[in-house]
Amino acid sequence: MSAPKKVVLAYSGGLDTSIILKWLQTEYGCEVITFTADLGQGEELEPARAKAELMGIKKENIHIVDVREEFVRDFVFPMFRANALYEGLYLLGTSIARPLISKHLVEIAQKHGADAVAHGATGKGNDQVRFELSAAALDPSIRVIAPWRLWDLTSRTKLLEFAEANQIPIAKDKRGEAPFSVDANLLHTSSEGRVLEDPAQEFPEYVLQRVVPVEQAPDQAEMVEITFEKGDAVAINGERMSPATILAKLNEIGGKHGVGVLDLVENRFVGMKSRGVYETPGGTILLEAHRGIEQITLDAGAGHLKDSIMPRYAELIYNGFWYSPEREALQALIDKTQEHVTGTVRVKLYKGKASTVARWSDHSLYSEKHVTFEEDAGAYDQKDAAGFIRLNALRLRLIATRNARVEKK
Image (cartoon, rainbow, N blue to C red; front, side, top):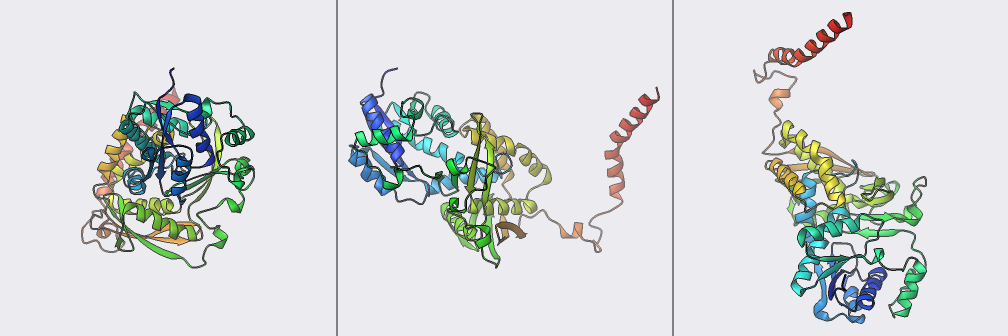
């Protein structure tokens, strides 16, 4: 395959992607365009611009884009309408960011007439799949370059030697092995590798970056009220906010109460198991509140159907199929169920737990007069239950009768 002429690189400004940038230039002699996404990772991103310029990237070829609102509005919130959990636990914080990054990589490539995009995901993980499936769906003609699957820089020593040989600045803390690897965005912080690789060992407290250890959480509970419109959070404690601001605020509140820490051994799409520590304080509160408002606004049939497809929906996101027709079809079903998911939920935060304690809505299906233990003024005729039970028991009686008859023979 011929060498690419122009490549758009997903660039963090860190050592690894800086090495990739230089490797693309030296290996292919191509022009490199950088894209750095502000996903709310909490890092200053302007140094990425300075570093790209230092490495010879033209100013017009450096793209640093604030995608926080787009991330929460168009990716996180649609996912939360589904109450999506991978393997029943993981809130998909890394998974849901990859299709957004891919979208911008492809758009920038089309804008500049680039013939390839590149990413820094390794050949062992899920992210390579997510980036490349998304790129294929968005632009089937685009070429994707994954240096970790191509180069011979197979050790930390070789990476540092390459950096030194090419005058790539190496921070002092990068000279040694980092105790663990971190990926962060507005939804979560993910920590993996090294000190976390033995699942038989409890993770060290210093791994936590966004959430205080539960033992250090306040002894006083805090109440937070979240208002929803058609399945999406629109206000906290009565104050309307943008999607990204809501998630950032819930992160702040939940983090100080020790909410949202998950130690998980998960099944990667590529086949191996991996252990990660995830901190998702705002997302944990949001999921609890969304479940709370659905309890009174969502019909049982629609709710149970939605719950039955949720594992498949979550798996599609985890495996990188955000832009697949099946995910879009499931999203249409999910969004239909959210038409009346409007109202307010009060959540109690205490010592690592977020619990719904109250919920109310003008769209509520809850009827106190039907469920009361007091006089219901004829709202429900209890005699109706006898026929209901007889009809539902009919097939069970027929089965039992058949079994008894067969056993006698």
